[in-house]
Image 1 (cartoon, rainbow, N blue to C red):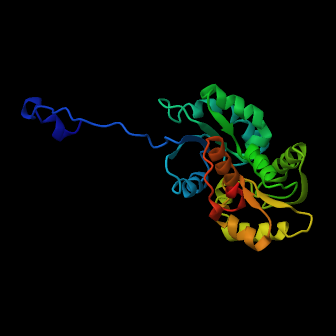
Image 2: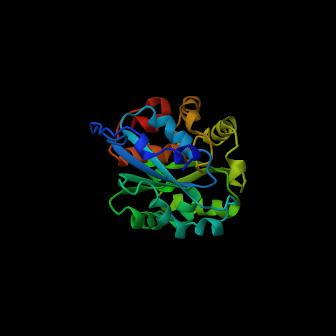
Image 3: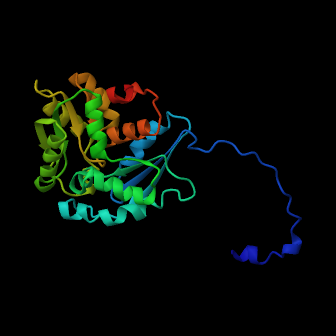
Length: 264
């Protein structure tokens, strides 16, 4: 209590008037989406909001999970024990329709099924996604089989990506990495750098589509522009997980300015 409030006697106040109110639809009356975001992530919420400002009745709630910004298989695996407790913080009084776990590399290292199990401990009635599952769903929806894959990671993490996409039936036609293991640096890689990398790897004749992995990378606002120049679908971790979260939540609005995926 402030010093000023402490000096006010309750008897000096007028009687409290009970006010009437109406109850209307909540902010997420169409869909409530929860995002478990890395403590070191600087990009996911920003790119989510670019889409949600176009949609009425869709709300995003996020909770940040502790992580080591130095990305290695060991630091990624360490997050698993914290997933359920973090998801419980999203909106305890109002269940989520969808929960998105926002780390691509941890999703392939820990495994999408294990991620979903951990999220279900917190919200058993929700639908779940992660960037790896969303990427597979998106690439199949786009009809792509031969991928150009771009990551920021070191080789120890990159090895998991090749194995994951191949296990899902995709061919890795081209693979490139910025070989940067610090998430803070990854978040500062420029969108123009992303566009150059996508054009460089995606222009090969045997590439059907480009996928850019990592929720810290800034590709979302460039996706449609790169697609127009390349003539092929382009997506990223955030691009795919936002689209997949909306579709899982029953939101089928078409937003073509965000690229081909958002027309599906």
